[in-house]
Length: 165
Image (tube, rainbow, N blue to C red; front, side):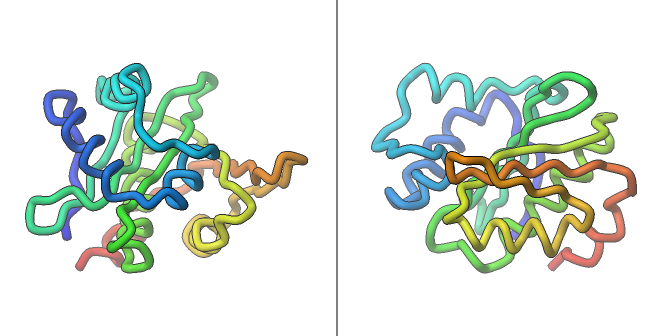
């Protein structure tokens, strides 16, 4: 498996491929709602990358996309993070690599914090956050969402080096 930056020219195809690889349950965990298909507007928004304010990484195995990690600037040097891993590749280290390398990319782009929302039911992702991002602040909201905020106060190069396969 390799993780690399996702470029705008290929993003639409990669987004569609990863979305097709998500079960209805995985789509619900990713989008916090039942999403049987991506609307054209959402598909365009997910594929709209500029490498700075909207950047993404793709995990590939045998040149086939198996996961995406995306960040979107939200102001105050912070970025919102979203991750999706196709069902057959879940719990095989793909999400771990994507989170670690996205944190490194965010630090390189001068972001000082990452944040995102995880459904309370998504215990595998919450365990990954607790394990991989020590110091992350998790706050449960009334709507079964856990708000995650992680300050990028240290370099993540050592973490990424340890995770390379």
